[in-house]
Every structure is written in structure tokens, then in C-alpha cells.
Amino acid sequence: MTLIETITVGSGGASSIEFTGIPGTGKDLLILVSSRNSSTSVSLEYRLNSDSTSSAYVMKLLQYKNGLVDTDSITSTKFSGVGVSTNYTANTFTSNAIYVSNYAGSTNKSVSIDEVSENNATQAYLRISAGVWNNTAAVTAFSVTSPNLLVEHSSASLYTIS
Amino acid sequence: MSVTPVKVVVDLSKPKGQRESIIELTSAELTEREEMRIESEASQAALDKAQKETAKKKLSGRNKLLDLGLTEAEVTALIG
Image (tube, rainbow over all chains, first blue to last red; front, side):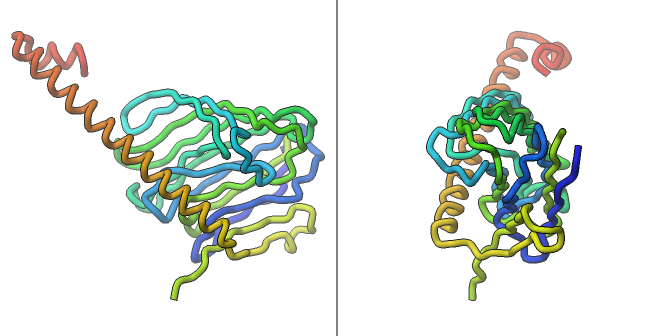
């Protein structure tokens, strides 16, 4: 596993972190995100190659949310992720791991996502997701986006797996 | 005066130290973020409503069991 880059958001926050020019030197890709939203939203979005095509992202998820366990199946213009909102305990952040298999290959890309939000209350998320990006292009870009801003000290690290 | 939100773009094809750019969002990106925010808030509101209804039903069910003569301990053992 090779760390390619870690980026930490500076003061003032940022709407998204985008990795571009991802080298095709690995087999799989792992992105680790630690983030907090500047709004009451508990959402994040992930995109590959800036693709916002309708139905490009299909995912099935199992999650604990706010005291309940449920499942969901989503077809969308992005993968949905778990965020920490301003309603959550101060200075808590998410822990999100996005794994993209065979990212430089020429088939649709399998993606698994494992994530939790931290909150010292009932309202919190634990989620595992399995998905596919319906695109055969090699993955050269990845973005994580907040509905508002990712606050200062949010970070994203990108690794390649040989 | 409002400040235009930015995104952090990291071009990994460049050498370390020259990769990071801070770029203001375009109007199209701002529109998309606003849609994302509205969608997220609607989803959260639906979740809150569903949870309130579940809690209400749970309380109603608990009270009915108590009315049938079960003790608090027995109801808790059954439904938590």
C-alpha cells in the first residue's frame, strides 16, 4: 500500500477535495477521509472522474442510523457517504474508507465503502456499502464533496494498492 | 460581502509540493451544491419523521402490553 498524497483542509474550509491525475500504477485504490460538515447535513458525495451521469453509480448499503438498522439501494449521479453535521458533538469527525477495485482496468469498477460518524448521542451513522461505477474508463480522479463546506482539519488520503 | 466557496484540487501528475490548488466554485458547481443541500435536508427531515413515528408506535405498544397486565420488567424483556 503506497500513500500517494494526504490533503488537509485549511482555515475557511472547502466545498470539496478532488484528486486528479491519479497514477495508474496500482491494482486497487483506497481513499481515507476524515471530515466534518459546516452545516446540519449528514451527507457526503463521492464521484469518480467527475462523472455526474444519471445512474452511473449504483450502491446497496446496510446501516445503523440514529438507533435503527436498515438497508437501502441507491442509483444516482454519485455515491452517497456519511458526514458529521454541526449538530454532532463538537470537534468530532467522520471516518470513511472508499476502496476501488481494479481502478486502472477497462471494466466497470467495484467499490466498497466503510464509514462511521462520531457523535456522543444516539444520532450517528455506521454504514457499509457495496457499489459499482458503471463506467469502463480507468479511474484518474476522485472527489469528496460536502453540501456546504468541509471544515478546517478535514482530510483525505489516497493510497494505491499493488 | 459573501465569499465564494472553494474546492481543493490535488493534481497527482505534478511533483509533491506543486499539486494543490484552491479554486473558487463555478456557478454551475454552486447550483449543484445547493441542490445537494436541499436533498440532504429533505432526507434528514424524512428520517426524523420516521423515527418519531416509530418511537410513538413503540410507546403505544408498550402501554398496551402494560394494560394487558404485564409488568414493566416483562415488557422490557420482550421489547427492550
